[in-house]
Length: 68
Image 1 (cartoon, rainbow, N blue to C red):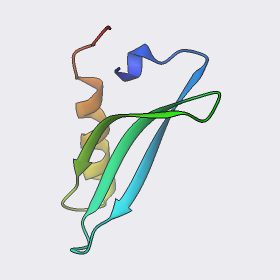
Image 2 (cartoon, rainbow, N blue to C red):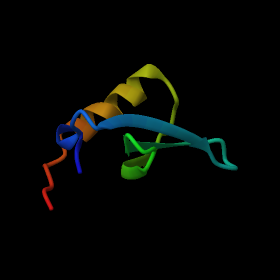
Image 3 (tube, helix red, strand yellow):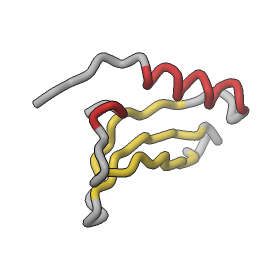
């Protein structure tokens, strides 16, 4: 599922976890109206600044669509 697959019943959220090395793991997930989540993509970012976050989100937008 890509961001373009999200409909009115789903919301995109970004979870951020920091590992022992201090590197943030970003997980973009879709969540349905029943709070059920499905990860879409994950990335370790070298730096947690606007430029790196924007690059991550732009990369996600370029992913090919996947239909079941």
